[in-house]
Image 1 (cartoon, rainbow, N blue to C red):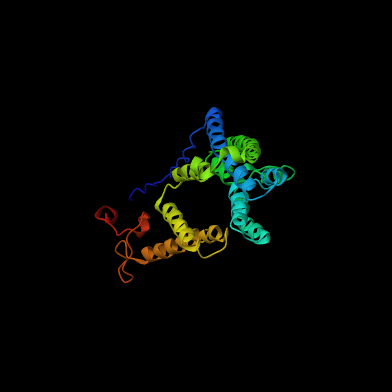
Image 2: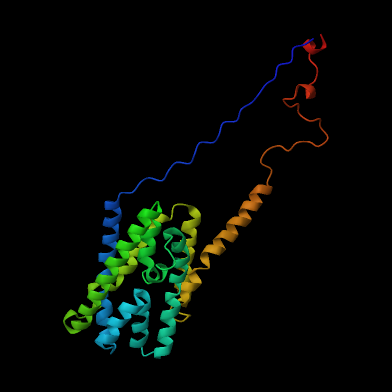
Length: 277
């Protein structure tokens, strides 16, 4: 009788994914302080601009304390400076600040704060704190980056708002200082390294195009919301291309009429000379 040998195959478990590189607390604090200080200085520009359109010192400081989102604050005083209706200016600022709600949805899962802490943390959910938080590899460093960035920026923004409103005449034209560009410049510097693949870069580029096209046509704040359509548009195109690629013949298909290829089961293999013997 022919000897039957049992062949056992063992599958090796896939290696675990590599752990994200550790980030030291000192590096997180350094980056968070750099962002907070750089952007916080632009509070000077807001204080000067707000005082220049006729808002009182109390109104200017209240905007920074309670609203605390520079883009919306500048949109409000800019619309008032252009002679716009206060309600229209406030509506534009509201639409511009609505993007922070989308940040909050993402940061809620990343930070994992308790329900009692979330209302207080929500006041610090802005562009800069979101960028620093999402750049961290784990929850502990994410909380550290969020806290240091939010605290530094909140304190410095309000102090420089007060100083700008008090010294509006001495400071002069804010455009000559370039302080109003500090916030967007820092945010773009943080965002650029996070665009690691082609899909993310295309989505960011399309968002910029949408803002530039709609900016002269739509009210203040609405172009920013329109730019959010770039991400789903790019994902839809990518999904269609992926389905089209999957339907293309990559390897020669198996002929249904041909006999099946012999497998590892001894009974399914054709008999050899040794088996016949």
